[in-house]
Structure formats: C-alpha cells, structure tokens
Length: 64
Image (tube, rainbow, N blue to C red):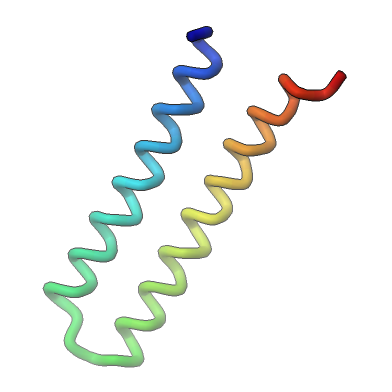
C-alpha cells in the first residue's frame, strides 16, 4: 500500500476515534438533552469536515 493510502487510512481511523471519544464523553458526562444534541451535532460537523478533506485528498489519485 502506498504511503498516501496508509496516511488516508490512518486519518480515517483518527476521525472515527475522535467521533467515538466525543460521543462516549457526551453520553457519560452530559445529562441535558439539548446540550447532548448540540455536542453531538458539533461532533458530526467536525468529523464530516475532516472526512470531506480526506475524501478530497484521496480523490485526486482517481482523476485521470
């Protein structure tokens, strides 16, 4: 596997871990429903933006 592919795979794992850690901390420590939904939405937005950049980075290898 080329180093670019490995780097992209590592980035995907990091994004998944970031989402999971924030989600579990949100479940454990936040009791308010509105605050819980706000933090979850912010987590989804941040992970979505990071995923967009990873996809954009990988996509350049498939442009012919």
